[in-house]
Every structure is written in structure tokens, then in C-alpha cells.
Length: 111
Image (cartoon, rainbow, N blue to C red; front, side, top):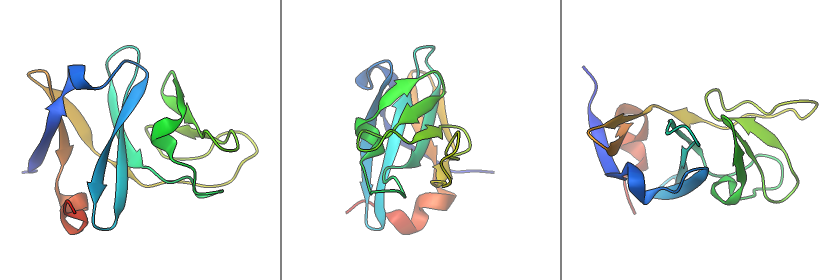
């Protein structure tokens, strides 16, 4: 059985936007798509360290604000000719609240 951490209300994240969960080992970007899906990925682009949480969300992808690398929000893989990947974290919505699965972020406790 998984343990989940409540990080806030779904309505606190704008459609096609993100919020950042700060941890000791880095930040996690939590995205809301236009159709109210939520995804959580490492916030730092592996290319030039751009903050993915400030990128443009389109469908289930986000474009890095620095150099336009596009990442699949479900897999964390860079799309197209770009090679790279960011870590992903399980996220879900329950009763209008956004939850992150805690086992992968246990060592990333809030700072």
C-alpha cells in the first residue's frame, strides 16, 4: 500500500500550469493539464538546468523555457531529436486534492 502526501488543491494549480514542491534534494514540478490530469517531474531540465515549472504545457508535454526542449510529462523523456530524461513521480487527484506518492520523495523531504 502506498502512502500519499497532500500538496494542495487542484484548483491552486492553473490549467496548463505548474506548482513547485521544494525538497532537500531538489524541486519537483507538479503540472495540471487542460483536461485536469496531474503529473509530477523533476523541475530541472538536464540540458541547461532550466526550470521546467516555468515552461509551456501543451497536451501531456512541457517545453523548457530556456532552450525549447520538450518533455513527456508521463515518462519524463525528451521528445524529438533531443536526448535526455527527467525523473517522474506518481501523482493523483482525490476529492479535489493533489497527492504525490511518498516513497520516491521520502529522501526529498521539504526544506
